[in-house]
Length: 319
Image (cartoon, rainbow, N blue to C red; front, side):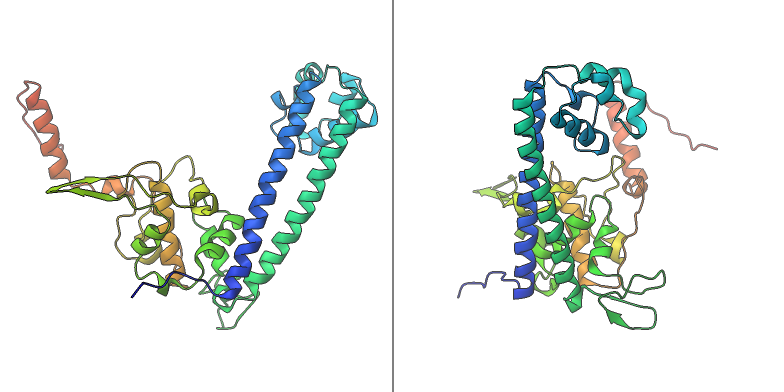
């Protein structure tokens, strides 16, 4: 009599193992970068105060030179490339410290670990792309109706590959799209409505009932470390598009409040994009929800607020 749990097919489970391992290795690589930054600070080098990414082309060249024995701040700053060249004076000051052979040995170990993890992450990414290409439901369709691993990439393709459809949503990158497919699969028939998928992700606020009183509770404690939609970063000018932007239907994806409402909105759109392979994301614009506001209701609300402050309000239609 128990409801069956969601168990994705074997091909999705294999994909999920790869995407989760890639996430773990990416976090491990970030920790090695933090350890390297701490090691440089121990040598009184503040490269991170000038370089946004110490593992970029310029930062990596400077660290390699330090390990090789170069200690002249002027020579080290001269290794800057691109836009960092204009910050030569700041680099000279940041690279003036007490980096010795001991720091060089430890930095070499950390860089080797970083490179090894990068190679493993790249190998996993290649394997993930192969696994997704082997799933028929994840493939696109060309204008002539032909489908296959490379189909759906043309400008006139009626159906884009699943990863490309999700990649069009603001805040979702290619890696995040791959991880989303690995976590929820491609068959949305197991989730009858977008609300079922949102509920499984523990993004639906609970209703707490006590007698005749109902009050809203917090969202559940899902495994958000495995939830790529929760890590997706909406753009700075964030329109919260409804599912109508993807399918032409009607759903208030922005109805939920709190810090997880963008994740919920993204997850609703994901459901529609996967439920209808021919659907495409369409950004409704930052002023979409404001344009759908009931003007009469908003006018009455403003009048009541002004009258509560002791004003007499007379309204005239603008010419």
